Image (cartoon, rainbow, N blue to C red; front, side, top):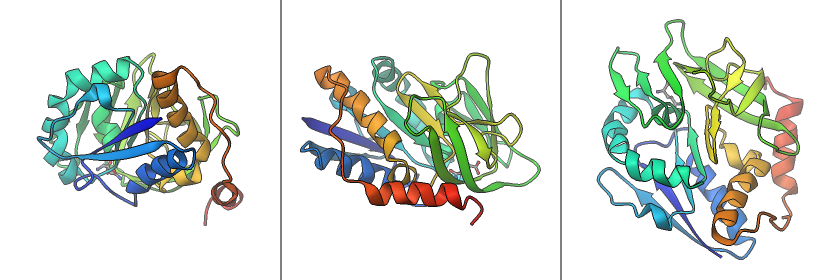
Length: 243
Ligand code: GLN
């Protein structure tokens, strides 16, 4: 199978090695014999969404988000149509915030969002949420745990009916108050988890790849991989969440 991964704003939005998520998706697909291309998309670059199999946007500081917010919103129609058609997408932290309704930054400026997730984010006034996160996914993942690292001032409120990606057992997640972490709508996943996330959560990487495969071929099963190292990293974080 051929697979095209769109990496949105790789220069502007790439905190804490978020690019590693794209590498993990590409490697796990290549190990299964897929022919993978990664398309880096910057402000103003055209995207043919019908040809895209997986989309990714990483995190960024407020000023990085300000550089790309208008450009991202200008892509709303094409992106939302692809997502409604089942396109899998992963959006991390600053990227997640801009997939919601809007993000009010630390300086009071309101950045518009795509509105795919029914969520609103405001920069908190009580400091940043920084540290390791362990969460239990609402997706049918085996095991159900997700591990990662968060560093954000933004506090995200999910509106009624918006499903979280997970519930935190360690860490702040969306806002440090309601226990929710991230959001999921169809096959689009938003999360605060850096890490990089997917190398340490191979089951989530494969969930995204399985959605991509189903869209192209109708087949959901993926051949298993030799990924003991990735699972060792996952278990290590579960065993030592505070380190
Ligand atoms: N600028 C956002 C915040 O601090 C996002 C940070 C990030 O992507 N890590 O909330």
